[in-house]
Amino acid sequence: MINIHVRRLKVQIFACFLKNRLILYLSVLVALKLHANMPTASLTKTSQLSNKLFKTCLYLVALSIPMYYRINALAVVLLAISWILTDDFKATLTQLKKRPLLIGWIIWYGLHAISYFYSDDKTIAGADLESKLSILLLPLIIGTQRKENEAQLKGVFTSFLLGLVIICFLSIGSSYLAYQEGHQLSHFFYHQLVHFADANAVYMSWYVLIGIAILLLAPPTFFFTKNKGIQIATIIILELFLLMLSARMVLLCQFAIILPILIYQSTKKDFTKGLINSGFAIVLLAIYGIVFLTNNPIKERFKEMTPSQTKNWVSKEDPSKQQFNNFTLRIFIWKTSMESIQQEHLYWYGSGIGDVAAIQQKTIEKHNFELNEGNRAKKIWEFNMHNMYIQELFMLGIIGLLTFLFILCRPLFFKFSTPYKWLFWSFQLTSIAVFFIESALQTQAGIIFFSFFSMLFLQHYYSSKETNQTV
Image (tube, rainbow, N blue to C red):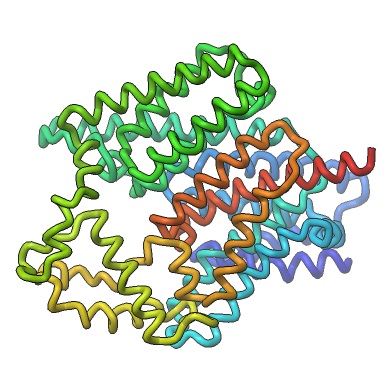
């Protein structure tokens, strides 16, 4: 009976995920009441069904990550409900005590919750807390699972890769239809490529690169098929999609993180395989070289970072010429956000999660003389920082930033005994790089993806460690 009452309290937290909270609340309470009134034999059958439901919801979350973000959020709700039906609350607390990094995640969310009370704009602060509930819930739902389950991890990887391939074909198909109307090649690149799904090209590139890393770095037992032809075809499809998305930081991560790790780990095991992977990297590098030697939208994205494209923004002589591009806008936001932190003395505990835009507006308006009319009309203060580290310092101060850095960097020092360590390091290092150019954990697209895969990897690490200690 105690567990039933505890579960009813937890339902109120999960209800924040849906707009119609009353329907979710009532439906789960009915399920719990039926669960409580069942005889023992029925409970055993129900437990088996609940476990299957939990696994299905886990796969659904992975499949829907590249999809429309509301579908993904709904999948997380279903996962939370299935967890309520299967979870042993006492066992969850026991596992939580054994896995300190999960507590770090919960503390980090707690700092956001505390900052709600010193934020002036409670509406924005409340919405921010609600959007970040996955940071609190997924460590409990996934991170505290007790057993290693390679079949489950394989199912998650397969579902995620399937979702990526589906969104790839849908994106190219949608872009082709748009091209037929306007005959603009730009429909096949960057944000316009995934516009139909209301997606961001940088986040989608992040997903795709991790999908490629799974195919290249996960042990063979984790592959959805033993057919090498299907694996190679999937890599080629995702590489093409990644190139078309043309997100600069993610493309750099492929050559600076994923491919070096691939070559190192394969050479360490088998020198011949290392040579083959080195050849793959050289071919890929040659393809990108050809792309940059010709005129195309991908090359134009990188030209935005050259001095010829930024000089008008740097100069204050003629504001009418100071048109922001994707790169210089980020620099302007970083500059003004650091000014805000210094002027408002936000270093220790930050502005709170609700007041970032209001403080930024005051600072940016001081720079209006540097901006042309079009740039002033953009309401740049409503944008996030496009840098997760600056965002954390701004909102939560040095304590929040250090907690965030602990969550990011501590796993890099784990001593892995599982064969997927290279994949985990690739995921972690790529995420650290992406956070330099995106406030990824200020959006559902980044929060669910990073929290979900982090918890999968941490759960597998902790459970394998505990298994080895008992042997």
